Length: 73
Image 1 (cartoon, rainbow, N blue to C red):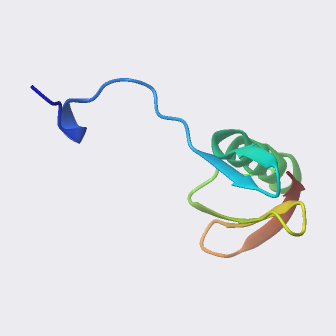
Image 2 (image 1 turned 90 degrees about the vertical axis):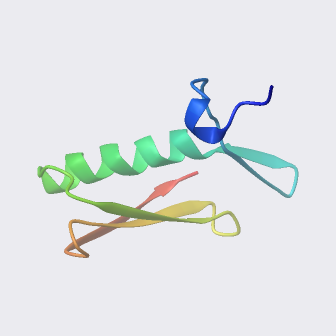
């Protein structure tokens, strides 16, 4: 019997592969969150992360667009 998504309790990892490079998107997200906390000294209410492999960066906006920044991939 196949499990549905709701029944699956294993770990999920998401990778982005571009030009023979692989990026772990969970690591990218943590880097962006860490960067935000270090710069803004605020609690994260929400965060949107935009990965641009061609720039070698992930850009983010946080707390309803009040803060923005970037991190290296």
